[in-house]
Every structure is written in structure tokens, then in C-alpha cells.
Length: 287
Image 1 (cartoon, helix red, strand yellow):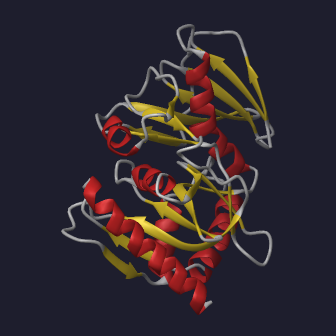
Image 2 (tube, one colour):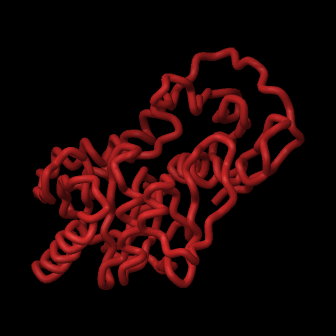
Image 3 (tube, helix red, strand yellow):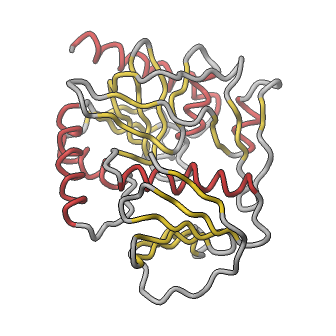
């Protein structure tokens, strides 16, 4: 793991070198910029904070701007910086969600806005438990591949919260940079705090589908998707990237991967859950 130090607020000075990565919002603005600097890296969130990360990613110093609140800093660190830090340390981290089905884990990956968190919340309020939202950590050290429990909360749009979350759900305080809300785990939204063996991965893609469609994809196609959703701090570190690629290739070969398309309508989620649960059970029996 790493240690996080919150420093005194300061203005964001111009960084001299060209960034090695940028994250662009749908409106074209920069959400985050990553620079390589002497001794490590800087992840800048314009208008909010700079996170200075040591080269080995064992220490992180946060330099907020004066107006940034503590909850905003914690959220950015937990959901944006920490997955990059863990990836730099050698963990397999991805942009995805996971739920427990039986004693297994099912993972959902896809671009932002395709319904991963909504699907996770749908499971978590209908007899299942969720394992992770957004920052997905995979443990491939042993004979089995496990999903590591993440933070016990789910972040989603208000329409999904209004449609799916129970009235007694614990909603965290709002954040300045997003209109999304965060729902904490509790009695009615159940969290699994133990690792679970990864049974299958579902890549969410076509949101205009007229019905639920599930298609097994080849390992080569799955590999491309795994890589697209990886958290990698330094994409120019050839040794790190090569090692990550090798491990992800094994995942794509070992774990059944599917393309999942379904209509993005709340009344369809029951059918989606049923298809996924049946599929996980059939894969488990086949194994």
C-alpha cells in the first residue's frame, strides 16, 4: 500500500514537461493530467489538487487548492489516484464493478455511463452483495483469480438512485465536481467484504439493444477490452506495461468473457440479472 499526506493548500503552478497521460471529459475539458517529474509523478486535477506520487508509488503527497474540501480530496484519491498507485505497485487494477453471485464474483466493465454501477446496485438490492465499484482490483497471485473487495459504496446518477435505492439508503454528502451521488453500503445495500473467485467478465457496450444479448468473446478480443479498462500510471514504462500485458493475457485466456448488451431501462434490470446469474451458475457447473 501507500501512505497519503495532505499538505497545505497551494496554487497549481505550471508544469514544464508534456503530460504522459490526460483524461478528457465529455465536454472537452481536462479532468486529470499526469506528468513525470524528478522522483516520480504528479497527477493534477485542475482546480482541485495535485497528487505527487513517488516513483515506487509508496508515498503520495496531496497539495489541494484552497477551495477544495476534505471529502472531495478523499473521493479523488480513493477513486482516481489509488487505482493508479496500486497499478504502479504491480496490482491489477481496472475501471469496473463486481458483484457476488453464489460464492463467485461477476465483473462488469465498460465506458463511463454505460450502467456498470446501476447494474451493481440492482444486484445489491435484490439478494446479492456487491464487491467493488469503479476501482476493481484483481488478485492473480494464486491458482485462482480473485476479486478484492473495494470501498463499500456505489457512485451513480440520481435517476438510478431514485429508481433503485431503498428509501433508507445512506447517501454520502455531495461533491463539488460531479452531480453523481454516492450510496454507502448498509442493511439494504449489501457489501461483500471477502475476496471472491472471479467467474466471468461482462463487457457492457451497446446501450441501444432491444433485448438482453449475451455473447462469449474470443480471448484475443477480451484482451483488447481488458487493456482498455486498465489503470496504468506510466504508460511509457515499457517493463511495467509488458508485465501488465502478460498478466492480462492470462486473464483473458483463463476467465470466460462476454459481451453484454441490454436496453438501459430500469424495468429490464430483472431480466439482465437473471441472464447473468444463470450464466455464472452454468460456467461454475462446467468448470
